[in-house]
Image (cartoon, rainbow over all chains, first blue to last red; front, side, top):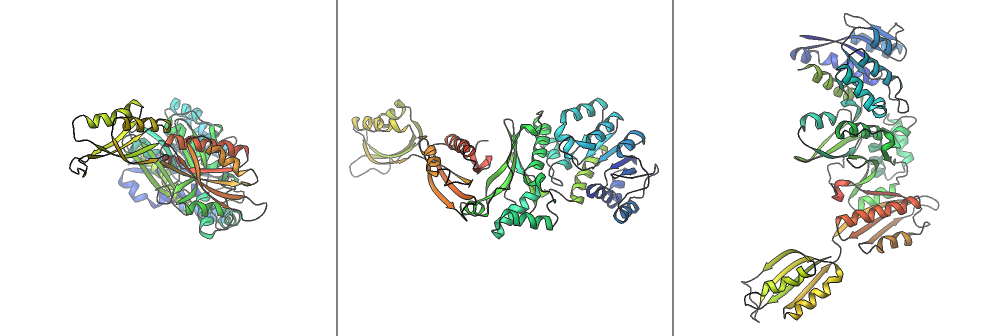
Amino acid sequence: MKTIRVSIIGFGAVGQGVAKVILDKQEYLESIGIDFKVVAIADSRTAAIDTNGVDLAALIARKNKEGTVGTEKLTGLKIIETIDHDLVVETTPTNIVTGGVGLENMLMAFKRKRNLVTSNKGPLAMQYSELMEAADAAGSKFLFEATVGGAMPVLNLARDALAGNKITNVEGIFNGTCNYILTRMMEEHAPYEQMLAEAQELGYAETDPTYDVEGIDTVCKMVILANCIFGMNATHEDVTVTGITKITPEALLLAHNDGYVIKLIGEVNDSRINVAPKLVPIDHPLAVGGSLNVASVQTDLSGPITVTGRGAGSIETASAILSDMISIYRN
Amino acid sequence: MRVSMDIELKDIPGQLLLALRPISEFKGNLISVVHHHEKKTPRGTIPVHIVFETKPDNLNNIISNLEDSDIGIVHIDEKRYYEHGAVILIGHIVHTDIQDTIDTIDNTGYAEVVDLNLSMPKVKMSSSASLKIDALSKEHLASAIELLRGIAKKKDLLVIEPIKSELGAI
């Protein structure tokens, strides 16, 4: 049995999801000889630390009841710096402008030569090459499947399953909120504002929906894909972006009459990175409804490979994180 | 443009070569030749169906060359455009001179707007339109959409174009 000491930095929906899946999958993890021992968890204000392993179930309950994970006043950054452990799971909220605390956490993890798995897009979209260089210099493993498409495997698909293929284009729906709004506008023949309100009521959209509906979230994911799969050194400034706020129900209907649906499509290839509403033929694999995500990877040997799945959600995102954690230590 | 042509050849050697030579001379691109040797006409000639691509300006030369060689042309079917695309426009489409938008595509010589559906829900609200564009080739269709993108930017219209794999540009 290999014991891996883990910290979870950020204990919101995703961080708690990670704690839950580690608990739920204990038996399976034992069967493959891995013991993820969580020695520290930090939220934005407090921390819980126990070098013998914290009680995950108790901390999830405490967080939900009292709003804090523990009583210690150590920040996530200090935990990464000072507590001895192997793997940092970074799940703090994304900050697209500066990379935020996530960027500092990641750089500290590499400075202390720890491995890192994250769901935090901001730092990767802002400072990809800096992070990669730091990880390489430290000899740290650095995986981030959860940053693109939640449970849907895209980065690992391209890197592992499609190894040997040259990938010429990736396009798809990478934001469930926009997909939900556009799908519902079509179904109800209702204006954008009304369906945004519905999405907010159901918790699919944030109070300030700008990040999703103006395409910024998709831009971050495209930058990560461009850097990770196409080896570019791109930032969000290299992406042309149009959001979905101007889409009308009439446009959706006209498109439908011509055999198309309108979807917010992110697209990356050698020559451009683009996020814009596009016409997708109704019978095309990319024409998925509801809040689903979908990605079509165009390859030289296998043609198009399309994957679809839930792009967000606590357990779904945690599933991608767990898969990265296992893939670091399985071999 | 793509031309489909039914011709009749005399049943003597060298006729097929004679029929195909003008297409090659005027830089046509031969796509298929079906030689119906078994279906001889009552006139004793052999029907041949040929399909080729050529520039519209060269078609008359090819036809007159064939006629000069005494090859009977039974039927010609020209299909100038054989790529079809759709785009959606959103914004103040009519007030920003829709005629001008259409003319810009039509005047290219390689693409045409062949269908327009317009939906104008209320005064001062954005209109939506679907445009169908026919073009000579996939590349020409992509250029026409590129052109439309430029016009739309100037007129503050949103263009929704087909996904890349649908445009076949991969």
